[in-house]
Length: 277
Image (cartoon, rainbow, N blue to C red; front, side):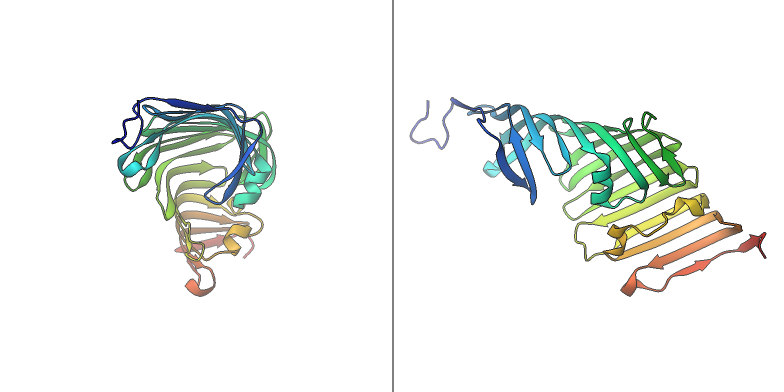
């Protein structure tokens, strides 16, 4: 029934089945949805079941629930998604510092109304020159993330990845204005230490990277500066106990670098030894 003095009916439902793909946008990103069904219920909100979604890079199938909360604002109540993405497109989009990307990444994402769980399996992907190491197709590497919704955004409580000679562990947060990653452990053939990365959504604000390492080799750096860094301001600060730069060994290294108008770069070392001197 829907009483005249009430804003919404107490019971009732509507089910929609797409006869063709629906085109739309999500935060300015084009998206196309097809298949499945959308059901609105006066008592339970909106439920989307077995729908296919296509973004420019990622595609997959998902189930989702939306409920109406305070002030008639709709919020996500549950989500389950199985996704796939072309790895070279991911690298190109986000200008990741690695070479020769190939293959696919498969992932899952779920939300129960409070907690997030995600996993990305790179079994079918390959790359070269990531922190001095590479990966062939068929080699293991899985990245897992768990988080929780808060009033200030998403708290990334655990980030864990292992495989292909690469180990990482940390946490972070995603707010309305930036992404912050605290990789307390990052171990690879050419790097052993930790990184704190701050990526503001405002591209006029500097991307900040702070690092501490027991060991770092020149091979940890890409052959050329990624376009994403060269196209926006950035600041890099690092303390490295032992830095190998080709034939040179530096110890007690303190690095401060910045793009254009954000300061002059400096590199200091307590000692330097080179077979070429």
